[in-house]
Image 1 (cartoon, rainbow, N blue to C red):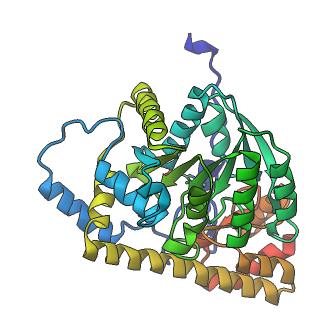
Image 2 (tube, protein in one colour):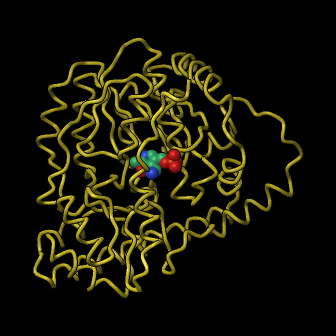
Length: 396
Ligand code: PMP
């Protein structure tokens, strides 16, 4: 049976990482994989996470099953973190959350739920979008289409074109929106643009699917959730997939959740009963450890304060690197790209590079990035910003 299977090519990002590690040059920069890195290039365990983890281990009485919805305290605390306390979706009990194995698990659960409705909606994703949105949604059986989003030349959102497309979509279709820190471009909607999008969604009876994987790493914990909060307060139905991988640094623990918002408490409960069944049919129930850590942090004032401070420090470090790189690019005369990078937010920016230019950067300058020109801002070495900017300018 298995002799029919041919080996697949290696994942390009992991291949890039392996090539970077094998590169013996003393001056080299890795802007590939999308994880936060400190000034030494490490992705450390947050102190608040370590403290919460020790408390969880000390207090744990049992490891018996929790059920497909996972840790309900985690679900409630994360709903509050994303939507804010006293959000109308929460007080009207129209929203419920299910713990999921990472943001990916959440995205897949939501996709399976959309398929389960039998409505066969097309899901519209931004052009470009995170490369894993494709398989996560289409492997569930959904058809994906792209809406205009990023103007590579100016590095900004093609908002008029985006709105025009949304205005032409059939009722019942789904629109995937990045809550903040757009991956791969770093180009986010302003609050005013979120308002306009929310209005079109209501008028056209489109269903938003918000993916929020970087809350706290763009403008701040509250500001980064404003779009998702506005959507949840405006539309009758929505899905929100949340990841704790980046903002809690819990990547490998697989922590996330899916929030389901419908027109009534009864409909939400019915929908969530289907999500539970879907989870049972795939992995039964999510892993506990990471969610227990997050619940511990968010239920403890001191740990929450410590976590917020660490998250702020990560965000500020990336802003500093972003601004330094932008200023260095401006010094090379690339004013437009420099301005775009300064205005983008989060862990990524997308350089207007041809794939061959990314190859040149790697082969000639030992600068590693995916061939679409996406760069991980946290991978920038403060001491090498001028070298980076000059190398990039030479291939722009
Ligand atoms: N959505 C986006 C846009 C992401 O960039 C990521 C992480 N790379 C995720 C969701 C989910 O990540 P995870 O499954 O690790 O929580």
